[in-house]
Length: 272
Image (tube, rainbow, N blue to C red; front, side, top):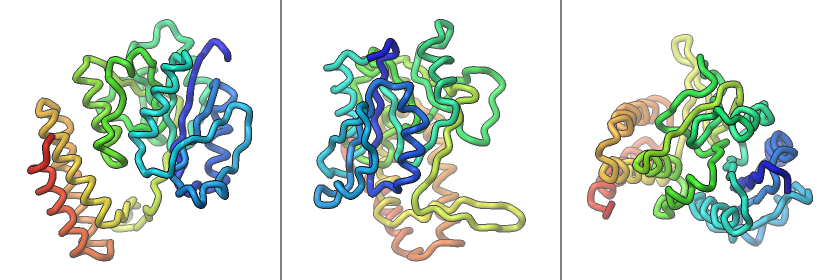
């Protein structure tokens, strides 16, 4: 194991071969081990093991839970002496990964906290910019800080996993930072681009079941972290956009609107 002591985990679900290979090749030379947690059902996952490498270990039990996968990696890191955990989505691609490591782990002047790559298209003035709500993909977490946070809440299986984790980290006084020029290219499954009045809009086109969970979990988080004004503002701004795009561009409008209403009601009555 080299001096970086970096463990990486990728959660896969019917991964596309080229995207997954490009993803892993971008960072595998600069980490010590890669865990591939397979959410693909047990009966089919062998057909999606596209990667063979001495650093790669397959794990998981076909359960669609990102939080469970991340907690598995956290415990693996603690038990095997790793100092950092890199969390990656299967469709992401981190450009300039060696630069990312040089600016963070190898940089004694890097701010103490959780680091995350710069999203493609975002402009940064400084090498590090504090951010309120980073996404999970590309996040680089010191294990000592992860121990303070206590891992991920497995109540949130897919949606809001990153939001809950970050809000919990902030409640412990742990900050999150974007790192300039470590670029993350992120794809969203099922999305499509529509053109309206000279603008290109990314329509997520989530199914009703996914919208139910998104709105339910968002309401729970607002109740759990009432001091997070950013998250409340983000939620009440984003729900307008969701409904507008559903009405204008998506199918199954009535079912999706019902799912949003049910999710909000469930989020209000559920234990936080």
